[in-house]
Image (cartoon, rainbow, N blue to C red; front, side):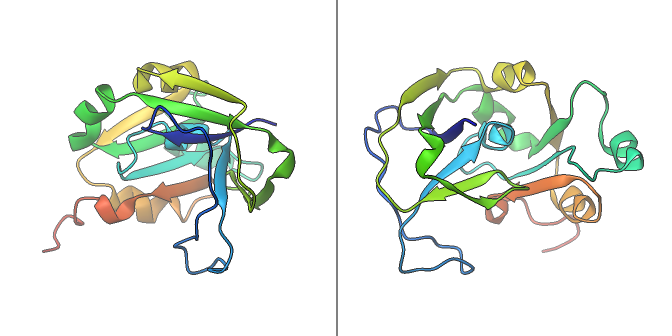
Length: 176
């Protein structure tokens, strides 16, 4: 299994555990976060880009596959707002690979792994074209004006999903 940390920073030599901001985690223990390769496409976007991501899981129904995918060859979708298209086109990301041995699984659906110890990356990869990298990984990118409809809809499916940086999303259509 391969684990990564995605960053816009090109020169990270050491990852220090940080206190989590999530209220469901112990705020007394710092963590280094990593993502597995299957869910890596969820993070191949600019850091603060709000996104709704979903992929086929073990329990995904045929009806959901037919409804939420435009191609059988793309089992993963990342939905972003139109306004992030140009930012995504013009940003470079860096993938820092970790030795997976010290990490434990936090969330299988989202592909999150954590470690309480400092981590030195074992590899670093530059990703200068995020769209090309997503397509290489058989990921479909969808551009929408507003994420909130798909945000609520996808949670009612049998798909594996993850929502990221939604606090930066456009307000729901019809709201003030």
